[in-house]
Image 1: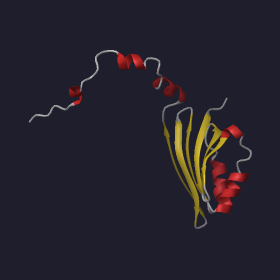
Image 2: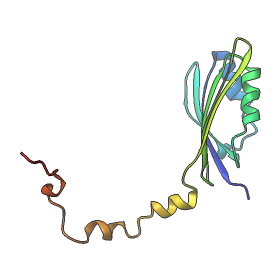
Image 3: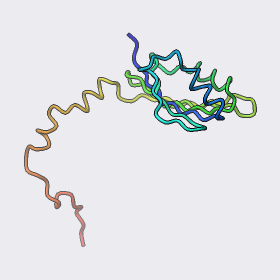
Image 4: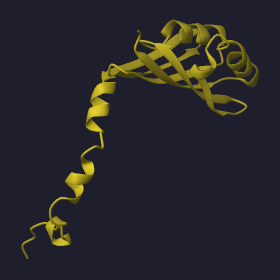
Length: 139
């Protein structure tokens, strides 16, 4: 089973090209995998699910086909890989910028953000006084 990769995509384009992109280019995505978050006359923000990693070829194809568009994809996959991909066409040339890093995988997030024993750590022992947080200033 593939790792889930969630893509938070922003697209700007002319009104006509934006409508064409949103209305036709993602029709093959299952309804649960494509969710528009905000849409205006010249921009759209949506979440898109993919397997393992972003579909970089699809994004590159969009900037080649719809030359007025600018695309930013902020993505992360459950194994801990994450990144940002930005693409557009400038003066007839494809311009792409990418940055990738490793962050917490899904299992580590679940482990670190578990709440089963947080309350006992917070409530056990005496409450801190404001004096505990003051610095040792010497006057």
